[in-house]
Amino acid sequence: MRDLQLALIFGLTGAGIWLVFGPIWIGFLGSLVLRYGRWAAWAGLLWVFLPALAVFGMLGVIKVLRSRWLWAQTGTVRPSRWAVPKRGNLISAIILVGGIAWGIGLRSLGWVDETFVLRMPWAATGWSFGYTLVGVGRELGLTRYIRTGLVGAAASSVILLTPISFGEAGLALGLGWFLVLSVSGGVTLRRAWLGAGEAIGRGSD
Image (cartoon, rainbow, N blue to C red; front, top):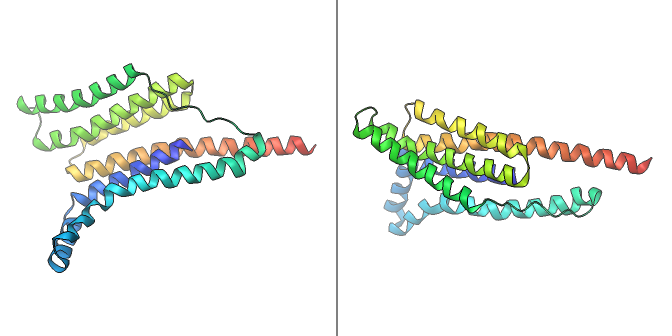
């Protein structure tokens, strides 16, 4: 279920970035400011708060599903702690900063254009988060996180190969990880559902 929570965060954040840096949202905010005054510009922060609200909302949904459905069949199970070693966090940060520095370096050599540099932060973010998931998978012994991290990191590289804008690259990152995490979470949730159903069947025999 944590996968679905992260998927929702990535999806909302990506959509928010695309809107904030897109002409439609900027024009909409401009019209609000002209009509209602400068305080209407605070509406631009809407997409900052939506991911945070999604986190709290999903936490409540996860708690209800676990207590009323899953744990009702399997008994109370303490969720695995999301643990990443300090070394893993450090390497993730290095991947992010290193990717951005690499893009700037390629631009200074004249090998890429400015749009490549603008897309690099999003690709590097995908690489960094992918490595984090791999670290979580190793720490918890969950191979699905390792697979998800590798697939997501590889998919993030596609951003560098497409001629899209900064906002569109943010949307691509968000939707890409939304898809990868949704598949991972959906498959896991289905397995848990089937496992609970089998437990009920054995209990009724």
